[in-house]
Image (cartoon, rainbow, N blue to C red; front, side):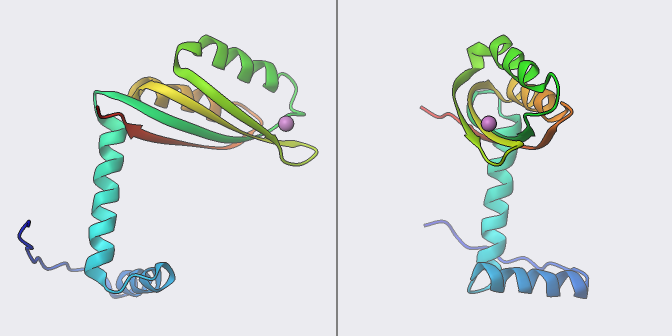
Length: 136
Ligand code: NI
């Protein structure tokens, strides 16, 4: 079993209060458990974002399909990037809004650029990219 090490953390009182409220909302039994989880999450996120190996990803984005030209732009972008797109899911959320989930595969940098291109389009209201390194 890995040895447990202790270290001290100094932070502002209001930040600590906000952190404790966060622990309550998430149901953490103590600060150590929450800090361990946050560190693991940050390390995983960094590996996913900058790791050199292949990644699988999901780009989740919400857009206004009434915006002139937007649908064609989105379609063109994903056709250009067909090698990286494995599947997609489209949900008609409201009269105007569509939610799309594109499942992607490729290098982190390529997928991040693709996600940024989609997010930058006028009429795309939000877009989040989830990446996970593929390990054999
Ligand atoms: Ni739709």
